[in-house]
Length: 69
Image (cartoon, rainbow, N blue to C red; front, side, top):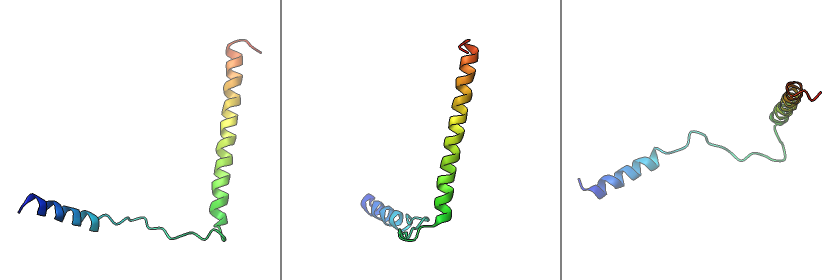
C-alpha cells in the first residue's frame, strides 16, 4: 500500500470518527432558561462577595502586622 493511499484512509477515518459528542441546538433567546440565568448570576455574586470579604480580611491583617491601625 502506498503512502498516499494510507494517508487518504487515515484522513477518511479521522473525518468519520471526529463527530463531536457535544451537539448543540440553537437556543431560543426569546425564552431564556431562568433557572440557569439565576444560578449563573447568583454564583457570580457569591464569588464577588467572597472576593471582597477576603480582600477586607487581607487589608486588616496587613494593617495589624505593620502597625498602621
